[in-house]
Length: 276
Length: 185
Image 1 (cartoon, each protein chain N blue to C red):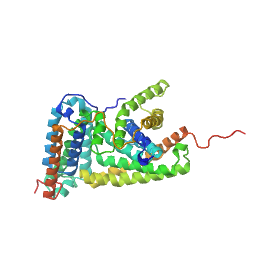
Image 2 (cartoon, rainbow over the protein chains, first blue to last red):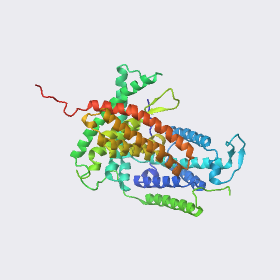
Image 3 (tube, chains in turn green, brown):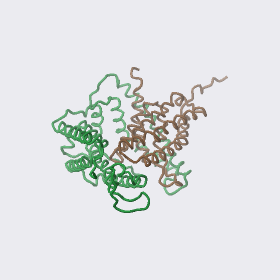
Image 4 (cartoon, rainbow over the protein chains, first blue to last red):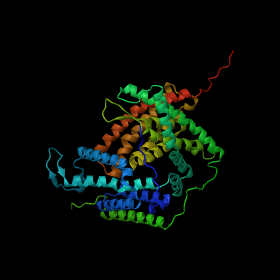
């Protein structure tokens, strides 16, 4: 079984050279904007900016296509779900009804509904390029340093760093155990009844969990011996000072957040309404 | 220990636990008789790590595991459900005060306590907090998110109730019971 996971892609571009902390702050600000606003203009602007930065970072579409197909299927299902459960949500929000296609019951397709669902999808699309970029252009070891930099306790930042460090290890153990069990005659392929599937999965998952939990003791003893957590601060091998491009990026994201909040306050609503 | 609520053991348990949580998201068992539903192994494991290492570790595994897992798998993070995973992890962990898992004790009374905690916290998380956050952040229709929350919640409560209990019981069998040694006559 293959596990598709995004990982760091090393390229020499301005986006890669930015510090992890600046990218993290931008990503958080960007997420806050996308979560709080329903303003189509802001969301479209964010999407376009995202695509441009994607191009600057020289990430190829083929390197992230498996993720994009996941997201597209999810968004499609989500949109269908919204339409089935609430075909009049758009009218409730925007207050008008422009019917495009007459359908029985409450299911008539309205401009308002289409516009509302377009906005919901845009909210995802506005963040996706940034989230993807953050993952593929930030070195895992720098990520923990950046979390600490923005004020997260270094103990928690270190937990995140351990997670990133151990994902490949757990993956390798999984494959080893799966092969060992296959050698012992546990059938991992084909269609079987539910009970047998459970037994088959537990033959791998239980040894995986028990053996990995043993590592917790070993690693925490090792850290204890090295006096982890005795001081209030720690330094990071991958921590870097901010440069001009970092300040500019944070400033840009901050200004956009202020603009978006100002638009919302001025309108008195999160929704941009073209229908009135 | 000065910072007892976040000891080294808790930090490591949270870090390695989150790594297992993320890997287990890729291993799902189709139920078969109900279409498109799978047994979520991650939450079963979350229950184990939380009752062994406590609420702080449980909450951190939920938070780090779900957010990082979402990011690595889908390239975007569904924040409202991440919050619920963290809360569920803390809730599972609160049961650890009343259990003695590390001492190998998990009798019928402990099973009842664990299940009480898991049903209550998952009900609050999936039936209440997840839909409310979905509505306030993503502006989704109320009836849709409540149906989603209820389906996910009931499925998780049942799977954690059956397989979570079973996994914790298996884990306790690997521990040495306190007072298991007897002096020979």
